Amino acid sequence: MSIEGSGGRHVIVTGASSGIGEATARLLVANGCRVTLAARRTDKLEALAAEINPSGKRVTIAPTDVNKPGDLERLVARANAIFGRIDAVVNNAGVDNGAKHWWTLPPEKSVLTLQTNLIAVVELTRLVLPQMLEHKAGNIINIGSVAGHIGTSSLYSASKFGLRGFSLSLRRELAGTGVHVSLVSPGFIRTPLTDKGRPLPMPGPEIVARAVQQLLEHPRAETVVPGWYRFLIFLENAFPFIGDRVVAQIRASKVGEKL
Image (cartoon, rainbow, N blue to C red; front, side, top):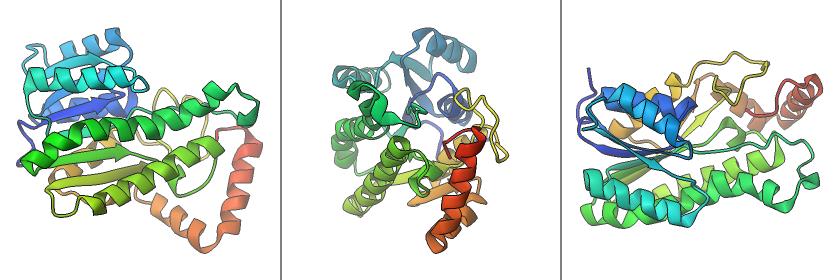
């Protein structure tokens, strides 16, 4: 059963070919939304679209590299051409180079994390905002991370701290316009990018998809999922030395760096 009011909305989902993006697209389509699927892997997008909406009436694909401005412009143009007005964007596409010593990487690789996780979100938001403001309605939902609260990996956390600052500030800038900006900050989530052991339990990406769906109906500044991560964020703010020890142990165990 769809959540009241969600059916019929046109939503762009980036990074839709797997993980959180795929789970979000599935749930939105199941609840009556029209969805434009954006990601680099055309074959994955085609397979997903055929599975979740064989008729093609409520799903279209837009092969997109979010780091290419031309691709973002084509994404928005295609979305408008197929389904008309864009009601919401879920900025999910993201990367984590996983490098402990990022300064040893070529500049283009180290900058890629910041470009994908932050700059691309800013650019896609810039492209869709004018029409949302014109219609005095819309939702921008950004997928951040608990790493936007708790510093873990330099570049990844920098991108997610930046995304959190962008989201919360833009929300205030757009207050009263009818356009809502929300941030989902997941902890460890089981996705193809987290295929190694982790020190904490990992729910599936569906928990993030459900948070996105709820934010479409009941916008708020930020949602942390799973909710118990809020306790870790509290500890980080109140007792940062505890965070130092925890992160040091995670790094020492070599079981992963991303929260």
